Amino acid sequence: MTTERSASYRILHLCNYSVLIVALGGLLGFAVFAGFWPPPPAYLNASEISSYFRENSFGIRVGMMVMFVCMPFYLTWTAVMAKIMERILTDSMSVLSQVVRTSGVAAMLTLMLPALYWMTAAFRPDSRSDGEIQMLYDLGWFMFDPPFVIFAIEWCAIGICMLMDKREQPLFPSWIAWLGFFTCATFISVLLIPFLTTGIFAWHGLITFWLVFVTFFVYLFCLVPLTRKALLRLEAEDRGKN
Image 1 (cartoon, rainbow, N blue to C red):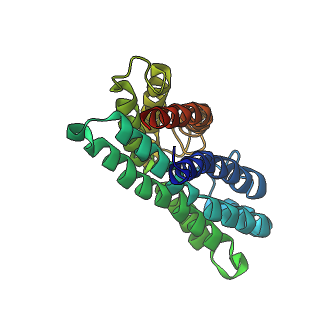
Image 2 (cartoon, helix red, strand yellow):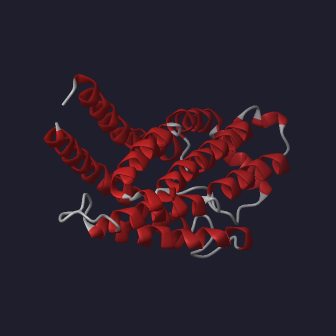
């Protein structure tokens, strides 16, 4: 294998691990610094929401900046997944790899924009009305949760590609594709948040928050080592051709 191709695979491995920056940085910013684990509930009134943002202004701003800086690494992970999918698919089905790429860009934005809204709500909170802070908080959740359907499109495309692998031993085990499909199915619940402020389907609820977030992270953390193995196999395939 040429030095150039070997360097290319090193970059692909780095891109694979970069999703850990998204996951761990997101948890650090969202859960630890901002204290959104669990988040202030949807049923709180404007006065209660604004009080939370005023009392935790600095932590929320730090957390949202950490989240904002880490989220672009979702693009680098999307790039390596699309590259692997291209090696699995035939030319007639290559559109799926393009779906992975384009939906990955949109998904990244849905992670970055809510951070900006919540950061704005925590910036100079004493000069904003309770209603303005509540509106920014609500807007952040509406930008954060319902667009999870974009992740569903991307991850379903990845899962379909995995199941279409015609190798005698596929690059990915089928269970990770089905775990991805299950994770995407949980995302359906986020479409209910504009209609509910209490219960398991509110944005702080058992299904819409806890189940969605847990399956989201479990899927990513399971996929990283499997992607590493897939890259090693592709590298071995390329080495065998030379």
